Structure formats: structure tokens, C-alpha cells
Length: 272
Ligand SMILES: C[S@@+](CC[C@H](N)C(=O)[O-])C[C@H]1O[C@@H](n2cnc3c(N)ncnc32)[C@H](O)[C@@H]1O
Image (cartoon, rainbow, N blue to C red):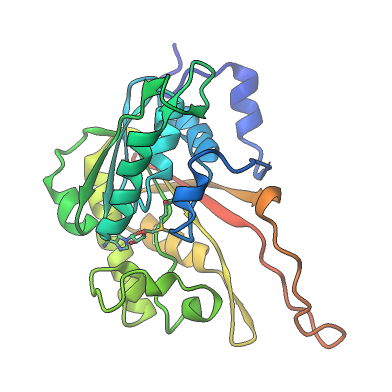
């Protein structure tokens, strides 16, 4: 039987199953525009993930698309992509990238002489927009959602993420409580399940937290909620990007153990 999922060789497939996933991507040409967002992912990483979970020309969706790093990754590896983003400013950044750059023969972003960067951005709340997408029509949902509400998981203290859409109730990052955040994640996962083709994957990138003196396994809590919507939780890869590693901070040195959380979890679910 042929490989129903991707176009990788056996050894490429095997390599990608390693739970430890270190990368070291230098900033690409679009980085100076994308970095206005503050929570971007390397397009090369997104391209690698998309390459594992789809074949050429298949359609993927990023429901929390930001400035479109997943859509850029899809363009690098010859897949079609749709993104949904609540904040129109980030859609404008993606469109500026589409107008300023292309993809070269070598699969890298370059100036004007290569292939147009395809990809459609929809402005809106993904909970509304996903409802308009036909069932069983998307080959992979690959995304990097807001990490949780500002009050309960310490978001606002660590980054300015919750400032992106201040006062916007539809922003997952502005949920009033962690319970509300998980309810929104569950609602999103139900729609993701419906629109995915059978036996295809939902991939979520999410970090853990340290909160009120304890480790807060945010990614595990999110994974358990997603499991309850019908997805099978197939695994997790631990992604560490050496290129953007900040210096370790001396939390509670010589007093007690406090981790420097430098990785993110890539959670992998399948519609079964
Ligand atoms: C972590 S960022 C994603 C960044 C993206 N991976 C990139 O590299 O550009 C999450 C995004 O989700 C958006 N967002 C939050 N709530 C949303 C919602 N209900 N529907 C659509 N987008 C939403 C935020 O505005 C933010 O840009």
C-alpha cells in the first residue's frame, strides 16, 4: 500500500518521529516585517511540519494565523493554505510580504523573481469562520494558538501577547479565566475535527508555564481537552530553536529549582 499521508522516504519519516526537535533557522528575508507581531514561528519549521502531514498541492488551515508564518511555510513546500486571523493589522503584514517577496526555485524566500506567495487570509474569529468551511475538506490544521488567558497563566507578565487585541473578547488570549480558555479551545477543536479529512492531523504548538511557584503543564491540559472532542492524541515533539534561545535567567538560584522553559511542545492529534 502507498503512503497515504506524505511524500517522504522511510528514513525521512523515521527522522521526523524523534520526540526531540532542535532547529537553528536564521531569520529569513520576511523576518523584519513579521517580527512586529512578537510571537512568530519560523516559516521553515512550519514548512517541515506541513511536509510531514500533507502531500504537494493539498490544502492546510491555520486558524490563528498571525502574520502568516504557516502560510509562508506552505508556500515554501508547495501546499495551498488558508489562514484566519482576528487582528487585521497582521493580515496587512502578510499581504505586504506577498507583495514584496516570492519563493525561489531553491524553496527559499527571495525578492521579486520567483513564484508568487499564494495563501488566503480571512479576517475574523476562527470560531465563526471555521463553521463556514465544508466538512472533510482540509488536509491538515496546523497552528499556534494564543497560550491562554492573561490572568490565570501569567501571560501578561511574561510577554505583551495579551496586548495584541486589547479588550477584544473574541481573542482566545483575553479569556476571562482558564476554564473559559479551555472551553474556547474545545469549541475550536470540535470544528477542526469536522473540517479535517478522515485520518488527517491537527498540530498545535504550545508552551508550558511556571506559575505561582509550580510547573503549569498548559500543553497537557490543552491536549486533554482536545482528546475529549474525538481526536486521538498521537504524540508530542519538543521543539527547541537554538537561534532564538535567550540567556537563561537566574530564577531562585541556590534556593530552589525553577526551570527556564526554553522549549515548546508540538502536539499531534489525528481524526480517527
Ligand atoms: C501565537 S499567534 C500566531 C502567530 C503565527 N504563528 C505567526 O507566526 O504569525 C496567535 C494569533 O491568534 C490570533 N487570535 C486570537 N484569537 C483569535 C480568534 N478567535 N480567531 C482568530 N485569530 C485569533 C491573535 O491575534 C494572534 O495573532
